[in-house]
Amino acid sequence: MKVLMVVTEKLPVPPVRGGAIQTYIDAVAPLLAKQHDITVLCRTDPSLPERDRRDGVAYVRVPGGMLDIYRDNVVAFLRKNQFDLIHIFNRPRLVMPVRVAAPHARIILSMHNDMFESQKIDPEEGTRAVETVERIVTVSNYVGQRITELQPAAKGKLRTIYSGVDPARFLPTWADGARKVRDSLRHEHGLSGKKVILFVGRLSPKKGADILVRAMPELARTHPDAALVLVGSKWYGEDKVSDYVAYVRSLAARSPIPVVTTGFVTPDQVHHWFWVGDLFVCASQWEEPLARVHFEAMAAGLPIVTTARGGNPEVMSGAECGVVVGRPDQPGAMAEVLGMLLSNGSLRDRLGRAGRKLAESQYNWDRVAREISEVWASKGK
Image (tube, rainbow, N blue to C red; front, side, top):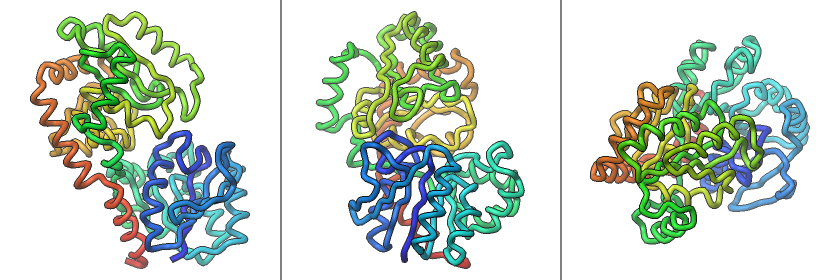
């Protein structure tokens, strides 16, 4: 089958500037290309050619950045190229323009965020998009629930396909290759002998990095040997200092516990930082669809602390690989859970090893690609 995968307008594939959706497509497209003729359509980037082919996948890059510009370029491409199936990622506003440009193609929509909210798409256009697409794939049950609240007709078209991780790249911290990098980075950043709490994500209020830093004074009373590492920047691929980033850094400068802020780390290096940690924290304050860093932390063998926000608790349900914080906006509640885990090395080890097993058995890219293939094959079902 000839398939076009349409990426969002913000970031390119491969994910040279990061991005969860871009990482997802970069991982599954070569696997899907073993059975299908795959083209990935994404935005241009100075570091990438407008067209190339790698791992059996054709890549076409057109100007993007703004959705209107990107939409016009997607439509122009489709007027010159035909596909059996078009899989649109996270942009329901592209569905109707794509349908006009490709009237006979099957259309699948993948949703990674709450993009059916009225401030993001006109409700009538959202209804037409739901009616037009064959299936709607979501990254969590939470996302599916939000879509059906706004567009009840979507209910029968939904399928949750959880994201994945490459366990061969995100090795567990106890693996020989990981241990050497771990020791080197910890020595370089003054973390030797510390119990390291790891955060990986964008530095924005909804990701909750400030809550973590504000939890450090209380944690220092019982765990003066702890340290916090914040991996990430304001936005993908850049290190601009926003007001919020400056605020977090000012809090870090006053922390009684060492706080390391790395700034932007390139996608090909970020797995090294997972090996630095002793436990991982997703401190999301917003209704997170389901942050893919959970799967990366699992693969790295780190016990997870996550928040009762959006889809995040779904990967914790019955998994015994981490703890959910019920009051994530309270630094004291965060400090309490962190302190409990830092005090119990055997519990951290048990949770981390359980997460690694889950990453290997359930949250690998082969499973994701297989489930996408099932959706593509289920025409009319």
